Length: 363
Image (cartoon, rainbow, N blue to C red; front, side, top):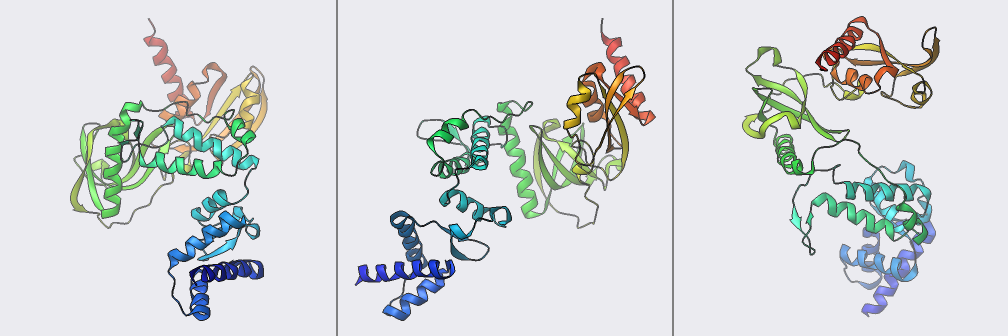
């Protein structure tokens, strides 16, 4: 009787897939109740779905959005998928041996090997005695799932594709950052202020965002209390490596005050500000060609022209935070004498003064 019920149940599920392309767990449970008078659990439905995948070769994906099982052949609009688990299921059970999957698979492998995209959360040792972390297990699960549907030739080709971060913290600092990030996440969940010392001053802050930017960890926060009155009631970006000691959770609730959260993507660099100015930067010689293809800021204006003395140039016009120009000046200086700040005048003077100080320090 059990085997007959199982066959009938699987037959109903395959029939629904052929007829309308999907079925829900409840539909299967109701069908079994009506035809056999017995009750089955959702776990039983899941096992039957696995049997269909394994023994009949039918690609079935569970849609978190629609709360039903769907035929993968009818779900090729992966660009419009609204749930990460839908995308993951497509990768796990669909036929995805494409160039897009090859590149994504290579990216996942690079993230695992680099160990710089994520700090460790719960560090433990695996069977080989190596340190692992929760994020590593998740990434390896994704890697294993994608391996099932990538050809051997693509797997071999993936070793020829690499992703790198050119600058990052020392791996030994990750444990320190793990403690800090855990406190920040705890603060956001419990809506309790954190306190720490930054540039010699203790501040009490409401964490707003955690940002991984060019291999470094930052967080944005609203300053609720500080010994410096000019710091109060402002949103500021903090570099975790510059925090003295650790970050500590307090027993004080978030203030509940309203404030504008600046977007760091609204101007050049990691420092977020609601007040920006416009910079004009030129690149000369062979840089004039190469810089035309790059973006420092998504909304920048890129132009080309010719200077009477220096020849052809490529020019960027982009916003930068008005209260700090250090990052932009440093970026320009990295190109030596082939890059120049044109406007505004105060930014150009700061750039020139920096060069003079550097020259004066050379003995």
